[in-house]
Image (tube, rainbow, N blue to C red; front, side, top):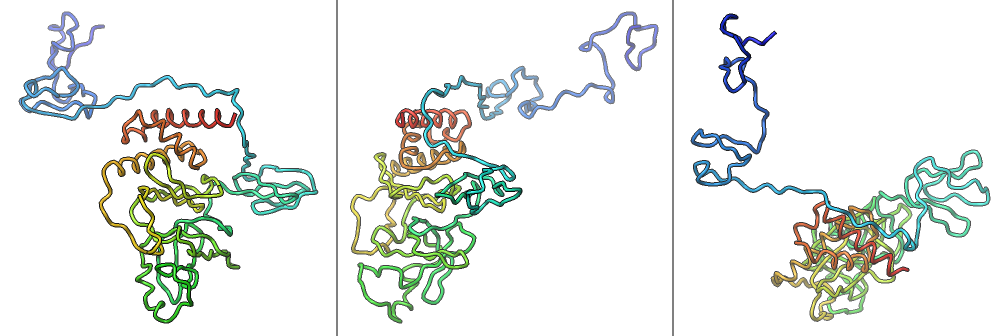
Length: 356
């Protein structure tokens, strides 16, 4: 039986009408699917394009162009290349070993003569001691670590420093170099001038001197390479992604330098032409940074975030390879998912080739 439009007598409907020829009542008019890219023209004329872009076609209406991302062919990773440094990853409840000759460390417990992981992380073994280092955790300080922190409070003969750990770190007045590298005992005048050296909000680089019984970290800056940080960009990542090396101060050939803090704070700054050792690390160079240096710093920052997205270890070689792989793309495009994966795969392949 043919459909009869509402409001017409049965005798007048001799053949089914097309939708374009029917006269629908307002309450029975079919709704068009909503699209945020289709907007009515200002003059009420119909526009065949999904987006009114031409000024003469839509009465002067202008809209921004839409960027469409199409899938790209991904370069396969060479599986035959050696993968040095494979790590034993465990989840909570996984059995690490059934050998009773091992001692349990942090992140493990013993049940039914089995050593079981209590956190998700990487298994580390020192002789007969087995522990699990959590992948996502606050920074646990170790003596000799290089850290980047921010001054949060000035107290009597000490500064409180935020270093991404469970407790605020401590920088004692007796653990710093005086301006000019002068070696003498700190007096009452030095205590009154503490804010002239460091104040709230200042960023510093320091070294872990000792660990208190409650887990708090004691810092020191008794070297001219430590001290106040001037102009640059601070990037916060997970401490487990920073690779431990002999040195964490790197001058990259691209014209910028990085400080890879073991606490997950990474400082990127333009490489100084000459180092001023007379100031003792307490003077900040506030001269304008050239545009070329700012672009290099921005590209390095995006490259580090791309490596963090794919859970790659951060050290000078991986950052440099990722930087070189990103030179064919604009800085703003590095964080796009397809571009990020492309440059990270290229950097990872270069690392595997260099290890092989």
